[in-house]
Length: 142
Image (cartoon, rainbow, N blue to C red; front, side):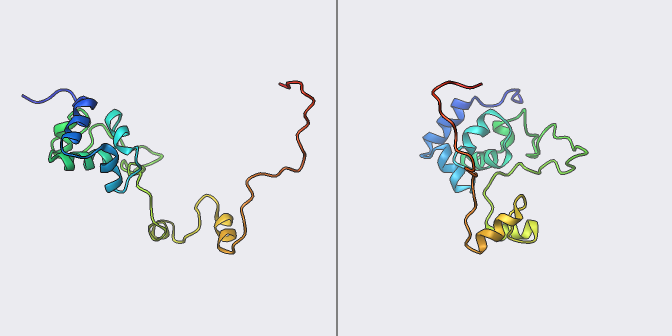
């Protein structure tokens, strides 16, 4: 009979612990953030869930049948007009500078290209400007 529910989060954690690891260990070994494993217990997080399933010697469908079909593909992922790639943004592994260069065509920050240039020249990046000192008369202002 096919499972109709995902494994309970505590059952997954117990299976991992019985094999001598933690979810943090699995996430870090997969190149993910240390919290990726715990996030994977609550919501679809393919890269972390694949790492957990591989560690346990199971398929992602065995553990999360409501989120993955028998071939291991996500169930219910729809392509949107805004983002036609349904897998975009699903891998939260930190990218190396060379990977970022391959993606963006340079090592500049895609959001702050001038910041990367300043950092390359050894200039500091101002966090804020304290042009006007705060007034303190003891009263609370709304």
